[in-house]
View (cartoon, rainbow, N blue to C red):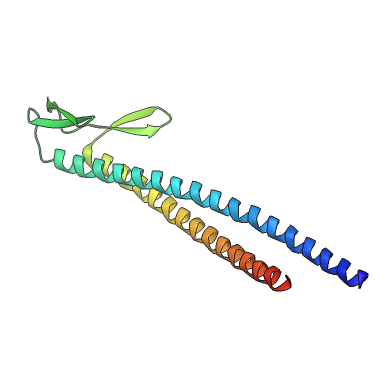
Length: 153
């Protein structure tokens, strides 16, 4: 009887160790999923910004120098501005570098950047789905171990 009681205790210890390990892994998956969700949100915001810029440039192409515009400056405030030219768009290229481009070239550049962002978003969505699947597997194993330990008591 002593030996059998000792085996049971060893088995319980192994289950407890596995439970702890699974809980740590589950928390890691949850943290990674949260971080990936935040990244996906930032990427979506960047995609929206690119779409807005493309639409704005498209509308500006229909205007002429001297036309008046209402431009948002933040905090729900806007100012009237007079358009000095419609043939030059300043596009940020990255690393603090900007360049003047004709409207059509700016639209092409921004469209390519948007496509890259959309690819990144698809990758992040795939990573998030994998994390969720792994977390579900861990949760299922945790439930299984919990049911086994209740059955032993």
